[in-house]
Length: 147
Image (tube, rainbow, N blue to C red; front, side, top):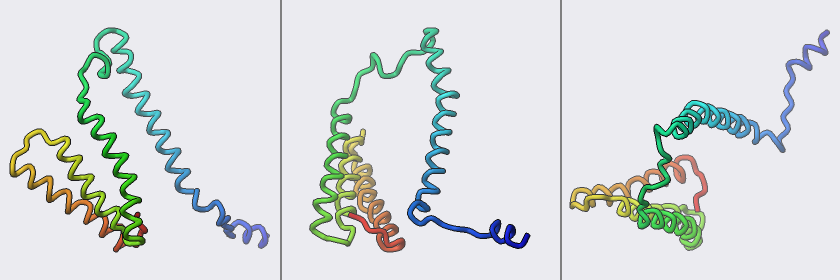
């Protein structure tokens, strides 16, 4: 009797796979939420398209090619340059910091509709403050290694 109780209360941890416990749970929760979205949003939308009440938003609309391809180029350059600049300042996170500042600035300028002095000032301040804050929290407070 006592042996059964001690077996019930004992815990053994497999350290080779224990780090996969929570990511597995998160993946299943996200898959479930994706299915809920499909059932509640996509299926009724497709039914309305079939009835002719709605149209697919992708077809027949003009595309902003400058912003579309600009975004693709900036994202590729961001990940490439983060490693390049990070190699210049190893183990400091400056690759993340400097490249993120440039990325946020260029991405904001790409999507900025009205180029006023006030809007440009806000974009410039945001391009410096947001990555700096993220870098400080990740690299200094949580000591997470950044490229």
